[in-house]
Structures are given as C-alpha cells and as structure tokens.
Image 1 (spheres, rainbow, N blue to C red):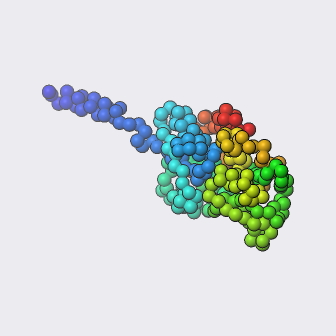
Image 2: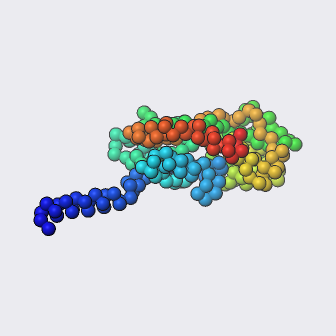
Image 3: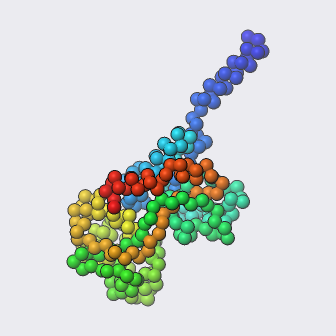
Length: 262
C-alpha cells in the first residue's frame, strides 16, 4: 500500500469513527428544577418537567439531549452560585443548563445586571384552600388571623409569615403537598396554601382527592399571581431560539388541557 492509499485509508477510518461517535455526548443540557411536586413531578421520571425535556430533545432533532435534574433549592443555589452571585457570564461558567418553572423575582439575580434569558411557560398563582363546609374567603393575610395554616417546610409566604411571627396566625408545616390536603380533610388545620397548578392537578388527577373535590373550597382571590419561566444563561441564544421555535407556551397549554387540568 503506497503513501497515498494509506492516507486515503486513514481519512476514511477517521470519518467512520467520527460518524459513529455518539453526537449527544457533548450536547447534553441539564434541565434543572427544584419543584418536586405535581404537576412538575408526578412519579419517578414522570410529570411536566420530564415531558418538557423529552419535547425539547425531540424539537432539537436529536442535536441536544435534555436531561432532568430535580434538586433542592439550597443545592441548586450552590450549583449556580457564580451565576446567582453575578460573576457570570464575564467569568467562564458552565452554561449547559436551563432552570424551569421559576420567576425573575425569586432570588436568582444577585448582581446589578440580569445574566439570564427568560422564556415564558405559563401563568400560575398561589391559592388558599379550605373546606367547603367552613370556607375561608381569602382577601389578604389578615383573612387567616386566628386560623391554623398548613404550610410547606422551608417556604416563605409573603405577608403571611409576618403575621405568624406576631402570633395572629398559627402555621404548621409539612413536607408533602398531598399530605397537607389529606390533613385538611382530617381537619388538622383550617386552610393551606399551594400553587394553583398543584391544586388543580390533585383535584383532577389524584384518585382519592378528586373523588372528594367538592369538599374543598379554593378561594377565588389568590394570595399571589405570577408567571413561570425557563431561565437560561446569556450566551445560549441557540437554546433561546429552540424554545421560541418549539412554541413552548402553546405546547404546555395543550399538555395541561389533555390531562384535565383547567
């Protein structure tokens, strides 16, 4: 075999190896979330977060594999500390990630400038739930005075926690959103606060709770209203374009309606 044939052979061999190399190995994007409750997580490897990752992977035509990572907020804060602290993107920071279901006002912008892109997912709110035979028509935090509120451990409730501290409201915390709804049915509290999307899921998709949905009263006045976004690093315009081209808002609206979620 002469030199030209050897070079041709080596070139073909290199091309074959390159084509056989898994394209996804260097194109993994982590889809982070700290929301480990329905509708975002409904079972192991199930829920809106998992479906969002699958949808985006498909929309990228196999060029990017979105991998779900559900982490506690404190651990997520450590993982994104340089971004939250305002050191990025000036500093070389990992940018192979997105953070789903969050809002710009939730403590991710620590510097003077916003270092992220934000893409809207859907509008949500926090609702006050009580029992229909003892309904609490919520208008402000003072509506809960003299009541026992079933809360979630580690969560801060604007306007409410100040009244808990003053003794006007009794707050009893739990670790699981569904458990708090069951506790309310057992009259172990007067009311609870949960995201409206989570309440909708339990009262339409959970066999036990949906069968008793008439026993729950969801106050028409919300404690807070907000928009959930995907947060992603500046400099990842490719990911932003993917989100825009994939029409995430419309896809999510369809996903939620197909699952009987108003």
